[in-house]
Length: 296
Image (cartoon, rainbow, N blue to C red; front, side):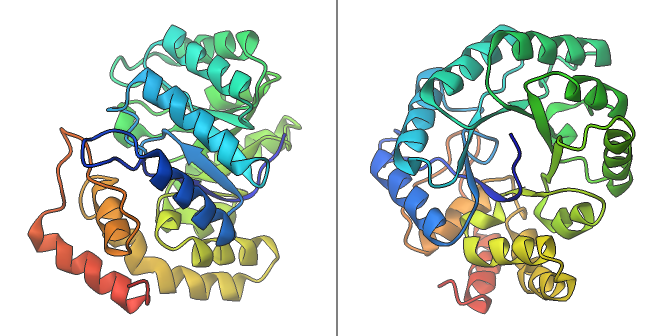
């Protein structure tokens, strides 16, 4: 199963009592679909996966699949630093009817390369659902190597990677190796909004985007323009959105994104501790960027 285009790494909305806000979550799903995105990811890093429990994670996956109802691709965040826990989540994503399970490289315990291969092989063999690798060394403390990526790309259920290593050269090496091994069905998605076009220029098929929470229409237009061969239009939109790409990471993700969405009237609530609300010195930066883009 292939994917190309813009998938949104959705925030998880919380109520004033710090519980999952199902009504708001469903509204946001429909808002993003109406703005033209191609896929939605729940319970990823932007969805505060580190501080939602397994029951909440499963609930979010169920709501996503139900509300989307086949209109766009659904990605279920299903990673953990425990292989058995990740496998449980992947199986839930399969049973819920998600299109893809996004499985992060295990964090904190820093597995060796052969450990990563064993991790993904066990999940691949035990759960029949398309699996997208998620490599984000800034969060996990380890960077999955090109040879290991290619090795697991040969497994029948491993279909793509969200690559958040900012090295364009690494993505070039992955794409070249995929072509050399006749694995051209395996897709690469950018994990960094500011590198969407650079990575697409060397073979990536789109993005799993934080920015698309806030400006889904223009993010999708940029990606689609590049996919259609209109590099000039894509570049115009890249620079139009550049300040937004940067300001949403002025503090830890998703703190600025949730602040922006609340300014836009989306009522997504606060972040969960140990994350805290946006500092006052940065609030004006987010507000200015949203005003410049006519989002508020």
